[in-house]
Length: 319
Ligand SMILES: [Zn+2]
Image 1: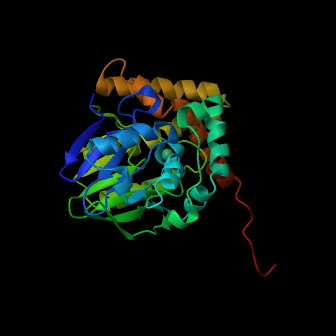
Image 2: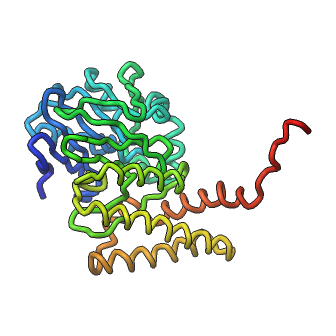
Image 3: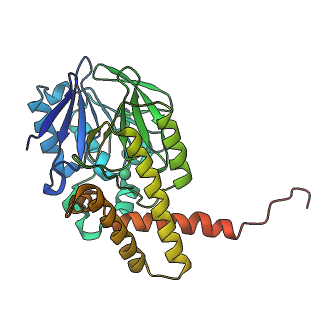
């Protein structure tokens, strides 16, 4: 399978071959006056990324910028190593994510809770991005990547510090994880809901913001361009709600984490096979394990809804 695929005159998707699996993490190379990447993938796959950049005809020393949608290690874990090796790179990030690129210690601890012993094998080292290379983008800020003037869109939900990148002239929308996970050839969307910052209400608002743009194409990190945008976003929203409902019901019934995970897994596999045929679920599990999505939802329900059920007494300044 080709490591790179040209998806527009000035746009290439590079398959970094995460965890020896094709087409689960993609990095976008934008060609033109300011060669740039959207997403680096993890450090463990950086050599594959750079080989892809060269294969697309770009000397990595000519890259000028990297924009990351958020700082989860499968999207930006390689940013520090890349920035140190190529000091000419500007690294664009959400203001809330920026401190964690400069000092990734807490990020690594948090990822360690999810991945345990597999963390280093999957992602490699996580090096800090030198502070002078970190460029913060706020909601609505323009950024020149390749030959495209993109707009950073604050899109919380999957994480509190998530950007999508919108190209008004082509109607291409680079979505990171906010439009979910849909692998090539699939008509199914998985809802990636890992801890610790999941916020379903914020996610709904982000989806409304994306729909209002009427994108022609969404370009997912997991994975590639998809043109069935309306169905994709509708499926994602439906699935967020369905999984939340299963988790909520499980918690209300006093079920264990394992029991709730089994329930979500069964339903998830049924849905994938309905759309994509038998055996289609395995590659989704590589990039977004059901267990992690359930943990995120359990934490979200505990943090928000259980707290809502016992609201703190309103503060009365006259008491
Ligand atoms: Zn993520």
